[in-house]
Image 1: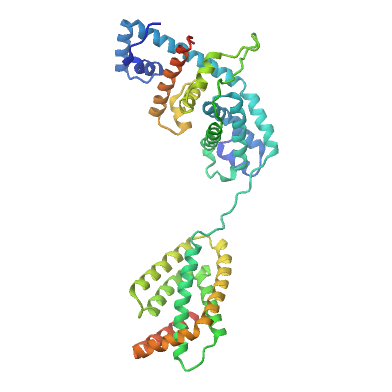
Image 2: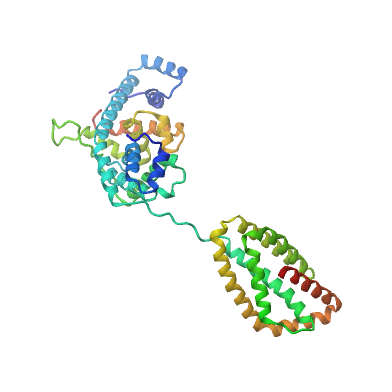
Length: 175
Length: 244
């Protein structure tokens, strides 16, 4: 892991230093991917768009004035790309498409019903839900990454949790 | 499963998310102790949360491979050179002001020349205008020119409409202040070129309108008599100051 600050890595990346930018990828890719997954509701789409966002971040690195703001900046790029893709695609995905860690049961998707239910949520509810549960259950961190208030995150989470439960219950299945 | 109390559902979710304060959490716990429907709802939500956390773990397990693919894809791209913004958004305003300023100066010079005994020397007039404007926009003298232009406007337009004078004066001041604040190195050459073209245009226009101007000036002189003569002498003096 590169010990340099984001600002130092951004300055080096401006000169075309791919190693420095790889340090930024290592530090921020996870959040970028989760934002894409949260909006798009599908792992394969999220992988494509997250990669696109990181590449655009490198191409446009000279437009970033404050190197320390890289995280929020690249997340905003990822979110915009994801929302644009979602709007251009109908219908919405039917499952998250997450593969299980263990392969004891090949072909069996992890928490299949839950993935299906999460994919049914509106993207603006799914996004904070995915970021909260998939990345450490920290409301304050989610609020900072999405640039919204903590009370706003709680409100979205509450609605998402209830709707998700309703979807699963109506499906005749409890997680 | 028993249904939870409808008016408690939000509080149960908030409780699970840790969003209730101590008093609210205590009140809910008292209710949960007595209501099996709400207890079952909370247990089901907690189970759902655990499943989501598991799912998150599965998602993160593939993160390193995804990152590697991104880093691999980066080999094909490079930062795009940022474009220095050469466009000067206020240039239109400056040119407009310059046109106004040149017209005013030309009118001042013209009045002096037309009323003076010697004939008009068009080439000399063009050279005077060009050197005056270019010198005015050189960075080192911009601030001094602000005062000169204002003074010249007031002098040359003293006999004209008050509103026109105020508008032109304000426009000259605002635009030249903006110009002074801009990057001089980037704008100097562009402004110099534009003013060269501008002087040519004005000269061409002046040549065709000279007869009409002369006629109009004669009419004005007949109407205003000695007042115009005084104005012409002052304008001529002011022009000589600018050239010097």
